[in-house]
Structures are given as C-alpha cells and as structure tokens.
Length: 129
Image 1 (cartoon, rainbow, N blue to C red):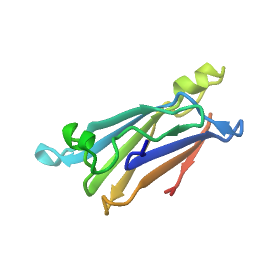
Image 2: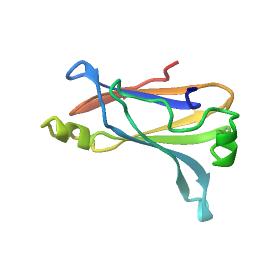
Image 3: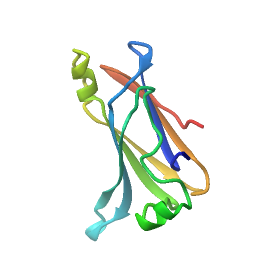
C-alpha cells in the first residue's frame, strides 16, 4: 500500500523506542472573518508499533483522495500529536499533553514527513524524508 503525502514518526527518546498509540491529527489553515486564524480538521491517525503514521491520508492522486476531498494543496498545515495518553499508559506524566507543529507545503507533489522526538518533558522535530 502506498503511503499518504503527509506522514509522521514518533520516537520516545527517554526509552529509545517508537511511541505506539499516539493520536495524530492534521489540520488545514485558512483566514477567517476579521483576520482570525482558523485550522480545520483534515486527517486523523494513530501511530503503529513502529511509531509511524503512514496512512492518515490516501495516496496522492488516488481515486480515494479525490472522493474523500483529501488532496494536499500548497498552503499552511498543522500536525497535532497527543502524547499524554501514551505517557500515562507507560506510567509517566508529561508536561506537553499536545504538541502542535505548523508547517508550510510549497510543493504538493513532494512527500512531507514530520518526525517527533518526545520525552515526558521535552520534544523536538525536523523535516524528515
């Protein structure tokens, strides 16, 4: 199965393992009335045993993407990770219940991979490949 145009990978650096079961949401940005910034739900997923979420969106250009109106266009997006439940399941508290990463898609034909490295009290990210 082909992967979607936006994917992610969550690694728990405090344990040196993938973070399975982290809820992930992708949102699209648009300017609302009176210049209010609005992000609308676009895709949803949960990380697998390898900490990856590869199929939040159907493959680019597929019939499924067209039918579900899930084509990725140029613009601003936000990916929201919810690690709190993951840490609670492993008996740990965390400081960041949500991690929100806003990013820009300039070329919709490219693949966008957003890795997240987490621990109970820190996180970092970068553009993956």
